Image 1 (cartoon, rainbow over the protein chains, first blue to last red):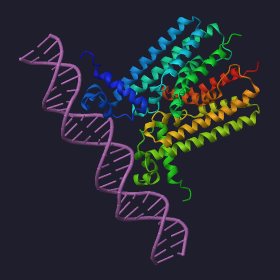
Image 2 (image 1 turned 90 degrees about the vertical axis):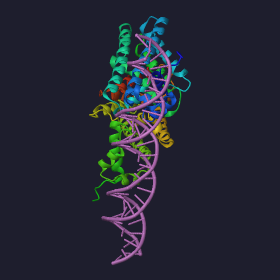
Image 3 (image 1 turned 135 degrees about the vertical axis):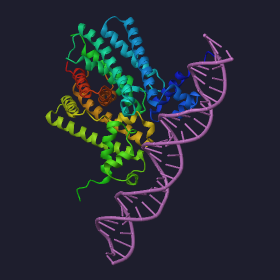
Image 4 (image 1 turned 60 degrees about the vertical axis):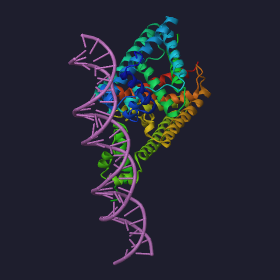
Length: 203
Length: 203
DNA sequence: TCCCGACTGTACCGCGAGTCCAGTTGACAC
DNA sequence: GTGTCAACTGGACTCGCGGTACAGTCGGGA
């Protein structure tokens, strides 16, 4: 039985699916242990409390999300060396990816935790914060590269523009969840993309 | 004692403040009744359960938010008849308003409920949905008026553009909450404003 | 053989939501 | 003055869930 995924990972998988579907509070430890086919004792052996579970989930989620961005923009870079076109292609890929998820994107854990933050400890909140700051830095860097070649038509704060990528995704996912529609997030990204095209259009 | 605000309103006030600060789940009925200086029985006399409280809060919140938008864009209209400039002024006013809130904007209840929706019944979810659809319609209408005068530089879906107003605000508020910064939402709105300026710029 | 990590199973605590209900209080009606 | 009704108070109780504690089991290396 080498094939058996280790229990901790199994707990995280099941918890993540449940939390993204119904929210953290609405997910009981009872149902997690039922899904993972372990006992309550087993759960607390791996996570000292629900907060530790949240932390582990968030850590894993952020790692995956970062890897995803790395991969996406690396592929975009292969298709076009120009930083603006690379950005535009990357956003297109991102939009397509969001669209292809059949049930719609699971919904970003970031927003979910941001709005229930009193349930979590400082560690979780800080993790959340650092993730967003990381994305700010990533996208800001890309926008700096673009600005060096294409002078923006209107002066903009590049930090804020970097945040706008995360913000548009988060906002789109909120709409998608609340409206029970499917393409809001990808549509919002495509709109943001036209914004960039206009902003960095050559004179 | 005509001055005494009726108990139901007092409960809503206190609950709203607490919920916006810490989230719905983290707010106990115990603390609400303590704040409102009533008994637990008194609370359940007014609301049959916590879900009914959520519904009432959401109803009130949406009403206030709509009145706020009405007022904001009416003022903008007074300053300039042109639909594009009216929109741009309205967004500026909105951004200023968000900035002036000393502790930052309380955070939109919409996103908060969207990410915990299993805690609420269908009525609450539908209320949430209708609110966003209402904003879509409102802003779509404004963008239609603009399009009649200013041909957009890139073709865009006006529903999606309407959603983008809500989305940018929601996304900005998520960032603001998670980062513990203060002006993200207003900055995001200002960026969206430059987008509109570029999109509808006369040739 | 023994040890150890990964559990199982059970008993127990405290808290908050929600129920039930009997009783009080003050305003207005007749 | 009596009755009635809405708006509560207060207390007792149930239930589910998070969390603790801990004794015992089981399989795989050293």
